[in-house]
Every structure is written in C-alpha cells, then in structure tokens.
Amino acid sequence: MRTPTMLLLLVGALIFSGAGLVRSDASDHRYKEGDTVPLYANKVGPFHNPSETYRYFDLPFCVPEGVKEKKEAFGEVLNGDRLVSAPYKLNFRDEKDSEVYCKKKLSKEEVKQFRKAVEKAYYFQMYYDDLPIWGFIGKVDKEIKSDPSEHRYFLYKHIQFEILYNNDRVIEISARMDPHSLVDLTEDKEVDAEFMYTVKWKETETPFEKRMEKYSMSSLPHHLEIHWFSIINSCVTVLLLTGFLATILMRYAQDEEAADDQEETGWKYIHGDVFRFPTHNSLFAASLGCGTQLFTLTVFIFMLALVGVFYPYNRGALFTALVVIYALTSGIAGYTSASFYCQLEGKSWVRNLLLTGCLFCGPLFLTFCFLNTVAITYTATAALPFGTIVVIVLIWTLVTSPLLVLGGIAGKTTNPSSAAPWYRSALPQMAMAGFLPFSAIYIELYYIFASVWGHRIYTIYSILFIVFIILIIVTAFITVALTYFQLAAEDHQSSLWGRSTGLFIYAYCLYYYYARYDMSGFMQTSFFFGYMACICYGFFLMLGTVGFRAAVPFVRHIYRSIKCE
Image (cartoon, rainbow, N blue to C red; front, side):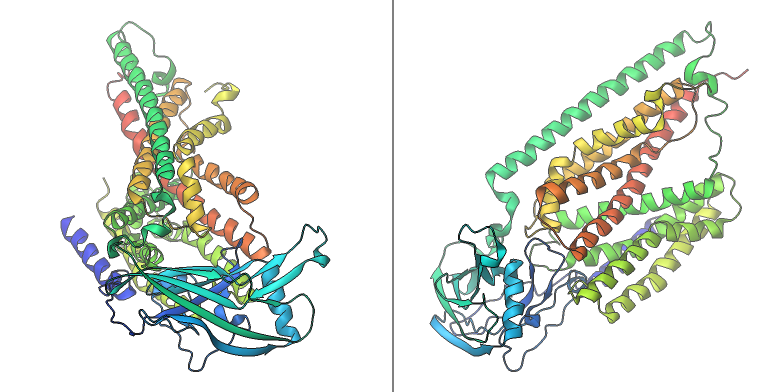
C-alpha cells in the first residue's frame, strides 16, 4: 500500500500547486516609499446575507479607466471572489487628504439602486496587499420613526483609510466612512456626488507574521476560554462513556466465567443471526465507501490546516483542497465499497460502484444545479462561470471516476425477536446516539457557522481538530454501547445510530438561521439550507461509517467465544 499512497500524495501535491493551493508567492511583499501596493475591489452585498454578493461595480460607482480583472485561482472562483482594480491609489507611505477621485451626477435610476442597497445594509469588500477591508456603503437615518416611508437614506462619499506599516511592510489597514460627508438618496431625483478618499499612514511595532491576528475572532482570551470549556465538557462525556463501556466488558467477562451452567439468553441467544447479511447490501456497502472517503477527506483537511496551508489571506485554498482531495480519495470509496460488497456475496459490483459514485455526488450535483441557477438569476458572484464548471466536470471525469473504478477493482480482487420497549426503538436510540456526539461539538459549531456564513475568520484549527477527535470517539463509544443494548434485546438488525448526528447538525442549522442570524431572501435561504443539507449528509455518511467500524470489532469480540451446539 505504500506505493499507491506515495503516488497519491505526489499527484495531490502537483494538483495543489496547479490549483493555487500551495502558493510560493505569499503576501510577503516589501515596498519602498511611493511604490504601488495592489488594491482590489472584490464584491458588495447585503450584510446579513453573506452568500448574496455581487460584483463591486454592479452598483453605479465611478468606474475608472483601464479597470483590470485579477486572475483568480480555482478556489477563489468557488469562493465567489471577483477582484478588479479599485479606483483608489494607496501607494506605500503616500498620504492624501480628501482627494477627489470622481465627480458624478447620479440619475434617478442610480439613486434608486443605491437607496435599495443602503436599505439592505450593503457592505463592500476590498483587498489591500491581501489584507481584507470591509465597510458599509451608506446608512439609514430612522430618527426613531417606525414608518419606513419616513426614513432617510444616505450614501457615504468619503472613505478614510488608515494604514499601519512596519519598516517596508504593510501590517494593517482599516476603512472608516466619514459620517458628515453624505449624499441624500431619499428622493427620486438626480443628485450630484463628489467621491473622495483620505489616506493616513502610521508606524507600528507589530511584526508581519502577526498581522492577521486582528481578523481572528478566536484569538481573543474570552473566546479561547469558551473553546477550552467546550473541550473539557466533551472530555467529561468521553470519560463517562469509557467507564460505561468498561462496565459492559467487565460484565461480559463475568458472564463468560459462568457461561457453562447457564442457558443462553439476551445477546447470546441470537449469535446465529447477528452476522447475517443486510437486506440492501449494495446500498450498505456504498454508504460505507462514501463515509470512509469523507472521513479520509476530513483528516487530510485537518492535516493541511494544522501545517498552516489555510492561512487567512490564502483565499480559496479550502475550496481547492476540498475539490482536489475529494477527487483523489475516490479510490478509497471504490475500494471500501467493492470490498464490503464482495464480502456480502454481492454479484453486481459494477452497479455497486455506480451507486457509490452517485450516493454523495448525486445529491450534491442536484443541489449545486439548483443553487447555481438561483445565483445566475440573481446575477450574484456565487454563480460559477462556465469555465469553472468545465474544470470541475473534467476533474470528476478524468480523476474521480477512474480512481473510483481502480479502487473498486482492487477491492473486488482482494476480497477477504420479540417486540421491544419504545425506548429501544430506532428513533429514541438514534436521538441518544446523535445527541451525545452533537453535545461535544455544538459550541464549536457557532464559531464555524460565524466564519462560513458570516464575516468572521476562523484560525484555531488545532482546537477544531481536538473537537473532531472527540466527536469520533464519542460516536464510536455510543455506537458500541447501543449495539450492546440492541443485542441484549435479541435484535440483530443494524441501525443508523452514528449517522444521526448529521440530523442534529441540520437541526442546529434551523436554530442558527432563525435565532442567531438575520439572513433573508430566497437566494440566501436556499444557499444556506441547500449546502448545509449536503454537508450534514456528508456527516451522516461519515459518522455512520465510524460507528460501524467501532461496532464490528466489539461484536466479533463478544461472539468469538460463544459455544454453538
């Protein structure tokens, strides 16, 4: 197995380099006074709908001559970035005071367009030397009036940049809008606007290596305390489950000592049924293959995060890694699925591979088609260009599918009761099996959601990795425990215990959408619930595989010494 693994890593490194994940030209630029520092305008959109973003010049700002579009990497396009040269000139250590860069007469239609954007709390995003800049384009003056028709709408026309530098490097930039320099957009009439900007430079002792700490919500002391409290709470759950499993194993050992003079009851009574093949063996094997692939994908993502590949201003690196690693690990799905399918005496292994290839990608593809159509209708930057879609299709056709087939071929050729009480039925046990792992991660989910569906930046991947390990352990332990209870009730049918955590995560999505954030609109709602459904489905498959992998050794262990008459 070493040769295929090394080949996989080598191919992955080559693809990473070509896709822009591994970057040798990180933003470690040094400048002299007066040098041009790259400033790009990225996008605008409603603050409370982070998926609904548009190109910067979709709003009727002054368009400078010779606007150039930056060539984005593959992951940047997936992230919805559409960078163009900004109308401001922020040369290194070159201060400017209220410099006018544009005078424009806004037409009635442009006034309406700006007013609608201000009403929806539009923000803009730019990048200066790869440092992100955010700001609102205007404000609503409500003056304690509840009637929206009496509100007044203003457009900011003066932006003030404050830039910190250390020797020859840019360390920090902030943008503040002048509250006294406004354009009144309340009435539908032509308005004269004079747009200007101010640039101030200040020296700082902050080293270049720490310039992104400002953007990390998780580096603050009180946030770190919350993270560690969550980890300690999860560790207590792990210890309790460990003690519980130890009790079960000790009881099993005592039962074995007195087994000769006792009649077989409980889980021992069904030793002839527990290893029967499942009814839908192809679907079962395919779900194990997809789950194993997604688990491998998650581990690789954490490895890259821990070594610092996903530094905050490496835009799109995470999306690139997800696509590339998923493609490269498809062979694992094919191998695992075909191997288990043949162990279950399945005959149509080609059909099983087709099911494995479509079990996760199928729902993801349908969801993407619907959401991309919505984004195209909105003319949002989330709509992928045709060329990017072609690249994804080529990756799936030339990398994912062949590796899936090769893995399947390798897996094929190397193939080795009475009615229960209500609390032993599927739903209560799935609720228990999903709740405990979910309780180990729910605090961290808030910070992840605030990063993915908000404007925060998540950087403490080490803590996230610890939480992921705890999630795996709790899922494995609770699955083993519930498996023992099920066998003790003389029920040998497998269940969806470990997978139910994905359902709890999706339930948390409902809570987050309605209680913790102010998203609105059909596009944002469809993007949030559509893509979260795919992510939760991935957890459903992955954690189900984790539970199965943990339960099988336990079942084999306790049945190994059963004496059959």
